[in-house]
Image (cartoon, rainbow, N blue to C red; front, side, top):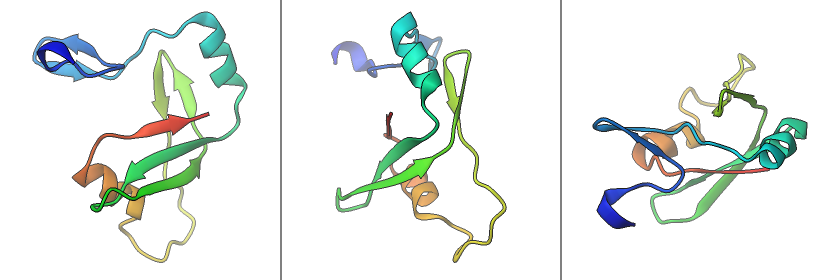
Length: 91
């Protein structure tokens, strides 16, 4: 992309703002979904997909990690995002 732009991001000063302007029909479609799938990538490029519950608020998608017991405190998706922040949401 020209000038270092990131698809789906709005340039705000020197930082990228992930808030996207969504067409009304796209927003309506997303708001009807109960679950999305978060796609991250492993170090070798292998995709890692997990179902997530989410909320769409003012063009931003929010998802939380619940308090249910986990096998580890560092979930693979969290580690993947920390190491490779490019993610995709599938609705």
